[in-house]
Amino acid sequence: RRGGAAASARRLAILLGHLAMSGANSAQHGPADSLADFRQSCSSVADAAKCESPAPYSSELYAATVPPGECVFGEEWSSAPLVKRELVAHDTILLTFGLPDDTPLGLSTCACLLVKGVDAAGGDVVRPYTPVSTNAMRGSFELMVKVYDGGALSTFLDRVTMGEQVEFKHIPFNVKIQYPFGAKHVGMLVGGTGITPMLQALHALLGTVDDETQITLIDSNKNQRDILAYGGCLILFLTDVPNLPPPPAACRLPPA
Image (cartoon, rainbow, N blue to C red; front, side, top):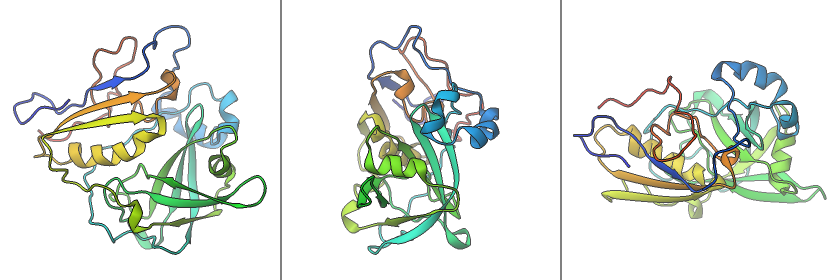
């Protein structure tokens, strides 16, 4: 939860839905300075067996909201090249796609993109993905992709090579509730990959200095290593969850 202006620090408390998080199976996160190594040898889920400590995803807070209708992708398919890939969890990759001329993505709050790939039988497959980057990122955008066994599009994306073009589009149906949300207290119920649209909402809420909205987020996962974006600067404060390390010291709180 986050308090108002009287709060000593702007913080987000998260109750993790998994109830048995202690023990020998707890995953260990690699240090941020190991990212270069992971970019070279641990960039796909197929590499996960040799990457015991994936580099954790992290992001600073940016409230870079735009109204609907400004996305660089429209209702017709167009392509963007893969420019970077990182393994950020045992079954999750962070893919960065390039945009021309230092352009921001221009996606409105909590909206998603449709992504097209090819399944094992050679047919087209389309799935929605909410970017984890914000419009503050220029010239590129990021997708966080959990790769499922037998997942038609996620396994396709796990095989995409550097420089390869992937097709995207954005349609009005994929525009959801917009910031400001008009509520004093916002509750978020998240299961696994459902964290990605909440990251967009959290950027808007926590990245706006004078926003006093209280936030409660319940994040349910099968086990601790399945938690996506844990270790990122969006998770500023964890409470009542045993045996979890604190968020990175490098996280910078927004101005009070």
